[in-house]
Length: 187
Image (cartoon, rainbow, N blue to C red; front, side, top):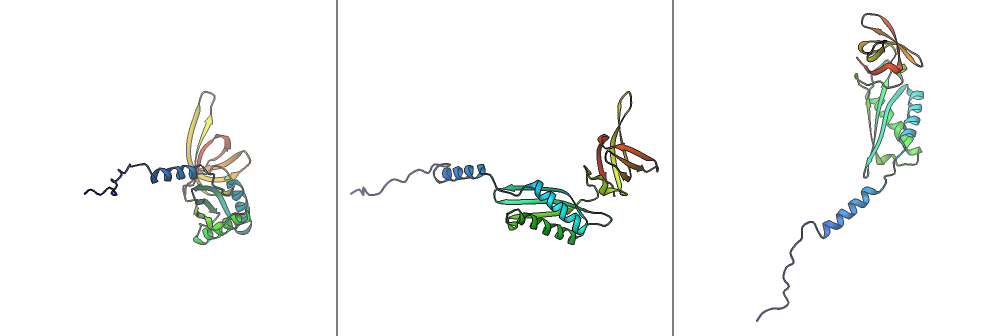
């Protein structure tokens, strides 16, 4: 006698069923906007506090988030001395306090603070690097053609629209900021 109560086993369809629902949930969650602290506000407030209280200069700050993983990357510089671990900790605490004052939970953020390093690319705030070794690539405009020159030397003085640079041959050169292609610390 045959048992009619036994049902045949269903074939499993790969990529369907439970996994299909999971994929829909993932697509929905990636479309949601993650609420993070404003990068510009965080940079400006942190920069002001660090410069006033401890002469630590905030050169760069980036805020990013992937899902619930919120990160802040900051680069600091200390004039006339190297950046120590305690400087990085101090900068981290200031960034945390600014995040908290902006109404966010500072514990949700992973904050990474590092020094500018000896090859930091100088894009603005040249005045921070006066009397330091730099390598500058700039162009000069002759009547016939533009010429690119790369020199190492000391950044002597910074004005609003030009710098005074002393090259390795001890020649002082006035270079317009608009002609500077690239500038780096060269320690």
